[in-house]
Length: 222
Length: 243
Image (tube, rainbow over all chains, first blue to last red; front, side, top):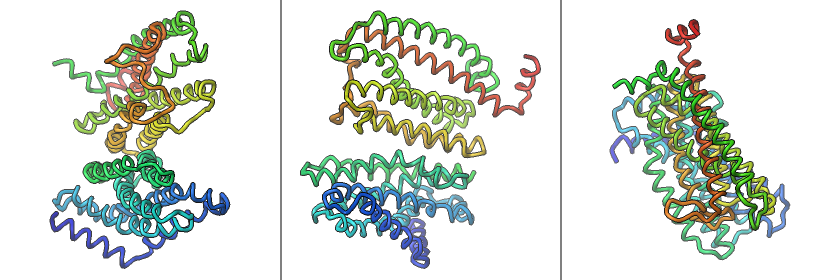
């Protein structure tokens, strides 16, 4: 990877460190949304154990949706996105740098905190580890695919609601296999298939999503 | 080569009208024939009685929902790569028909599932992926209509359609890849069909009828889109003045 990739990554992380509100807001949203469900369905531990993996996964998914606007919007508004396109560096590499930094800022904290929420739901240690693993595999895919939606709707009216309608259908398979792995494991079934498909989705999206996103950004800035 | 002139909205516009009339005639004849086979020729099913006859609407609609999505992404892709307006207009015209076919497939499926499976809806692989297909159509139409600049809207929604095309093989192969409640493939290119031949022929005739209808209605819709987008051109104003 060339210099442009690393310097862009470094710049994004530096910006995030200087303005920590983004990380903290997303994290607290995750905590609060996950806590809503025990309030809603009652504290009975068997129910919570059943719905726990799904609730935590949906919480992570909603956090990913919530944080999407900050991938490109600020740069689009102040013109730096145009500079990135005009810089002559391959746009797919720059896009990858932006998304990796986005995931490190908004996705990784959620992944780290998720096992703690899992304890709240009464999940056993093996499930917590599996939850950590599936989220670690799945949240980058959420960031990558979500950024396709963010790139397509740059500067469009209807903003985040429109982005949500566009990308939630693509989020569904990740949710099915990610949460499904933890649930299946709790029932004693093998999860090799689930993990394989999650890894496959990660590989495919790392390879192909930057192409789609670069195309979408160029269209938005024509 | 004079054939290529039809890739211009100006020349395609009158051709679309003529073609649409022909396809509508085919659609009506095939529908009448198909429904005749479906209601009067095909026998009563051993297990399901008469309720299976909804297959003559459900399966053609489902086939068309997948096929139209493939066509829509094809034309959107052509419009994106070759920068042709008419291709993107055609993709835009196909979307509502595809969405309607998906909705009909889901709705008739629910009506069929209630007496046979005992449930209006199950979360199995095929039904879930068909529901996602409906959301993909709606997302495509939503993105297209929320971007004001037509050319930018064409290209952005083309990317969305192409990203979503991976869902169609998933729907098609879902009954092979997963244990599902939905019936497996009874019709394939490699084996003889596992249903009575009159049922099969009724289904195929109705599928053809739905196809003819979809083409006809999409051609009419693309004419409307051409009128909207080319409203400031000379040829359109002349033809309006003349006819």
